[in-house]
Image 1 (cartoon, rainbow, N blue to C red):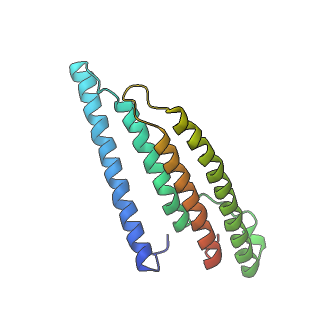
Image 2: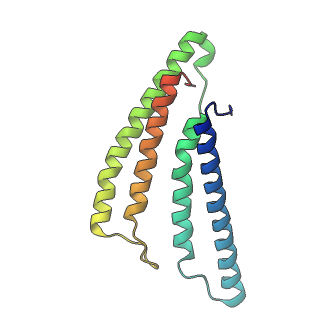
Image 3: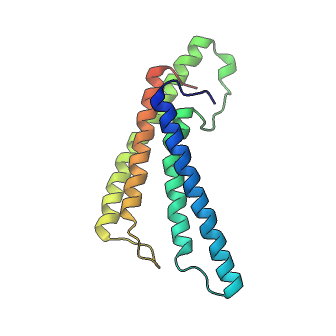
Length: 159
């Protein structure tokens, strides 16, 4: 992974890294408490599974723009060996633009789905936590990842 070039990139990496660490720590504590209560006292933590699911959702989708910016998505380099440096750069930019288009399409489709979910008032089963805001969060993070792909294409940071 290359080091971020700008101060804002380093700060964004730090903020997202700290946020991810806090979420992971909370998930660990929640799981520990749930296991102790479940097997030690036969009283599982009410809604523990739902909260863990929602924290995992936030962790994954908050990390998506960070992984995109770092260029750490899984890639295959079957064609790269056959191409020269200039062709590889052009291919990298084309892939970044294609990924941006897919992310924007997905964000657009999910925004409609988020509206539907929020309109129905969908909530988790036990704690009745509204699901709509989480779907909107997912949508925004996917859109942000699309913007990061555009930034990488413009900066020539393609694969």
